[in-house]
Amino acid sequence: MLNLPCRCVRTLPAIPSIRVFSTSPRLQDYSRPARVRTTKFVEALHRKTGEPIWQLVKLLHAPGHRLGLSEALHSLELSAYQYNRWKPIIYDPDISSALTALRRDGFIASHSCPPWVLLYLTVYKVRTPHHATGPLMDLAYACMDDAPAEVKAALLTFTAFHLARFNLLVPIRQVVNSFLNIPFSDPHRHNLYFNLFLQALSCNPTRSVENCECCGSHLEDYGVTSVASSVAYIHITPR
Image: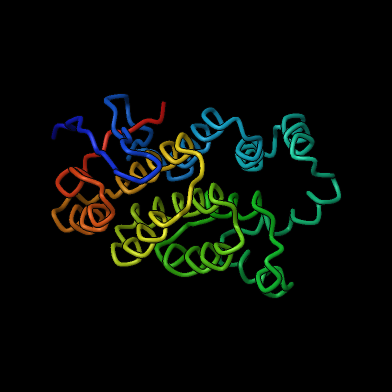
């Protein structure tokens, strides 16, 4: 089956025209484990934003890189004490047990879980469809109100990725709606995250009209055109 390049334009008051499709090689490879594909997203975010948080998220998943991890912590002004404080949560076996610990210790109620921990859990600790529809959605939305726009966008992008890879269409509608309501102030970052979000949606291994319509109808409601017939064959890489 051919992947055909296409264009998608979203019209916004501050951003009259956004190019969100390219003919570059796609980030995801459906034959690879999910952690490999999510790492590609993390690498793209680090490369395009230059934010050290993404280097830290990647290195936390590769604890053998001790020197790089120390440098990444330093770049975010995080001490060894802070790292060790959150280490038990980071290295919980999955997002369900991590969320249980966060709730038990009051971090969810107090909104005191730092972004680098939230993003790491969202990227690398989702193992099953139950994790995606339960703990992942709970964690993302529990922390959404207080998060900066870019953290919201990242949380929703990786949430969309995991929901899509398990073909969980119903919760994807909520995630799409939430993403499209994020108030970005920087049009370039908006463009970047919008591209990545669409690519996350394209990670659904099941190709069907229902999948296209599930995401496409929501996107078109917000002024995004040429998506409903193309979202299952998205070909995107942020530039």
